[in-house]
Image (tube, rainbow, N blue to C red):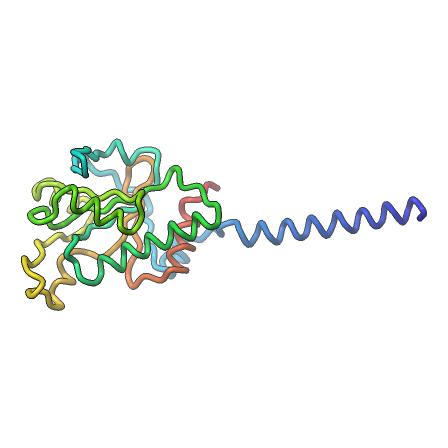
Length: 216
């Protein structure tokens, strides 16, 4: 085979490989979304991330969770409680499925974490809420604060934390007002970056989360 034909074939093969690489890279690389696009897909990002004060939570094994534990990581925070019948399991399952999908895609989760904070400290112990969080993913953290600390933190994060009913029989549509059902996002500097709003959609949740946390 003449040398010029070999060169031509080689160039064609290289071109095809390059096109295929670019196509795969486009499919696997999270797309940048503007603030309006994020909002349409269920996520609100603050124009500037909001700082909030120090706090101390308690998790299983008498482990203290402080603001220092948020540094250097993207943290999904959800305020719920272990007796919550509907919206809490749905939100926690969304985070669980997000992690499962990211793991399948080979996404780096070393600087990502999820934190469940109980809004029912009178009934949820640190061990109970941490065990509940780990039902969804063993890496998730569940934690409790006394009510004054809880109210202080929740107020700064714009979360309503009315004390839940004491008995399951007391639950009605009113229990939906016990807390804002948003999933919050804290950035690696420990600032309130934005939040995901219900109703949650797995594809949109994945799309917006990746768009925000992937380095550009």
